[in-house]
Length: 434
Image (cartoon, rainbow, N blue to C red; front, side, top):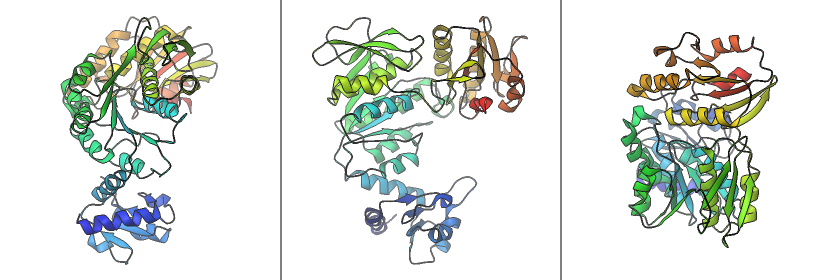
């Protein structure tokens, strides 16, 4: 894209401050960006977008650049990304880039809620954490904002590097390095390298890195950088208010933490699962670093209630159901099962869905989960094609999809049961409760 068009788009955006990428939901007075996908071409909807109220349309096919209020570029997506990159440079505020294999969104929500107690905080909404979502999130920045928390997801190498070039984080957090998106990253070392691209950016741009001292991979990465803050779980609290002490995780996480004067405070949360204690520790550490008061930190973390199928506890037909079905990989599946078995008392039912994007690692990963649960004193039900490819005990139920599972599930007496729903987003286990 030539510099003249790039400047034109930026100046137009600075006047309008609105963008749209979906012709079905046009924001009046916005710039419509014609994006392309495997099954759609946004250029074909440019005229419709203008008729619905878009002021300008950015297109990348000359035949659709007919009216005067169309801007022709080489690539519509690149134009959107360049606009976000240019707009981000106008803000001289802390931008916290956040990535990791597990816990990104929960950490982001906790961090944003904590920082919001003192600052006008902008943060990623939902899962807008990819090559389209990150630019759209940045374009929602306003002059009133004093800090931003930008979640960055990736399923292959160089993706975090690219997102960093757009978001330009001044601070960064990698929640953990785990067995997620192994197909795209090519194994755990590939994941480590890919997530480490955030640290590489911070190192090159004099940024500050937050890392979990309990994750050996992160400790190794952090050795490269001087500007860093370690946080995590400790058995006792003495002289470091960036750490917390986990007292219990059943039924909810209970912790001790310190203020800047090293006075101990106790906090009972509404969050389940020992693995979430590290996400809490991240939010507390960042809150301390940005001088959020201890009372505000306690209120932010203590009142946070999980939602959107992430570590969410719900009641359904007399059962208590732990919905952890937003995503799954071998690491998160393991800790979710372990936490569920320890934290919730009662007769248990595990309904586990396929773990996606594991490639050649998939069969072994699913077999490992089956071997883990085959001798549990709990009924286990497996859902999806990948679980159907491994060796299953005769007594273990397996269904090809959620629809077939629901036909069985709706006939069960759920009263008094404690149920875990854990699987990848593509499986959609939450539809069992529709």
